[in-house]
Image 1 (tube, helix red, strand yellow):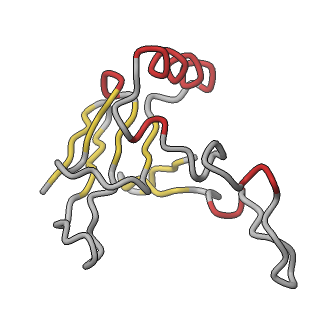
Image 2 (cartoon, rainbow, N blue to C red; image 1 turned 45 degrees about the vertical axis):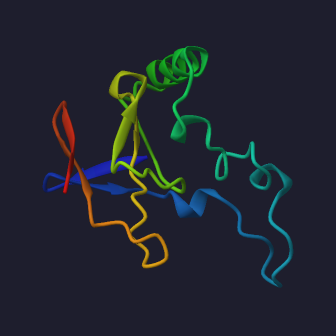
Image 3 (tube, rainbow, N blue to C red; image 1 turned 90 degrees about the horizontal axis):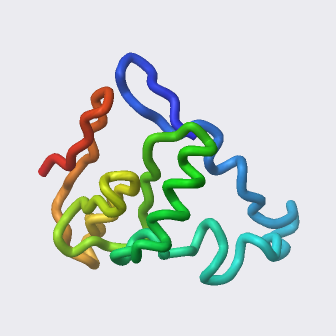
Length: 116
């Protein structure tokens, strides 16, 4: 969920939505682990096929959401859009280990673009 405050979009309640294990450092809930979990899934970060884009469009339309913004899979060419701009991959590898440069995703109304 994203909220606009003075024209700046910010995540709302994202981290609180995912249980991080119990207070004693116990394991995370089963649904959050593994490559198909909502946190680790990379389906939309690596050139999704037409079926994946159709599924995404159906989900976003049902939720009345314009687009999905994802990270956690470095995009070597910089910020990348797939599925006709319905998914934006914003992990550009800014960590020193990856050597990526700083980029930001600008969303102004219906206009979306990556800025270098």
